[in-house]
Amino acid sequence: MTSPAPARRRDAARTRQLLLDAARVRFAQDGYAATTVRDIADDAGVNVALISRYFRSKEGLFEACLTTAVDEMRRAAGSATLAEVPRRIAEQAAGIDSDGIPRQLVLLLRSSGDTRADEIRIGILRSYAENLAGLAGWTEGDDKLLLRAQIAIAASLGIAMLRSKTPLEPLASATEQDLLGPLSDLISAVVRSDA
Image (cartoon, rainbow, N blue to C red):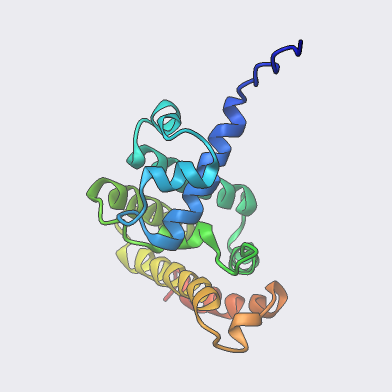
């Protein structure tokens, strides 16, 4: 007589992370509207009901993906000074997944087709621009400096997208070190309080 197999212990943190990882890939690759919770659960190898348990809904999972991506980017950025920003951007742009996609950055760019999800994404981008402008001395109401910061962020995100989606050389194969000089020039030229 064989004894029954031991009950598998649930690992909530691991399951949650599996769902986040699978969702980040799907949302970045297929977009919000084309991604189903069934796709994500299948990719994660878990029951689809666990999405509701851990994230309430597809929107909640998307928000968690964005929040996690931003948290990881903030940890990488730390408390950067304006002079350190180009290096941090170069790290993010060069820090792509094994399949060549900078998923954290792509999540911030892809329109979701869902109003609430897009509001979350736009809020995060706005926050980044305000933080960058703040490093250059921005104060509330200084739309000129905020616009400059938004342009620098748009250029940085464009770099990440071109690197991941096109064979445009030498950009596509540029290393973090290769990107640092041009990004330093870009940030110092665009994000200045005296311009």
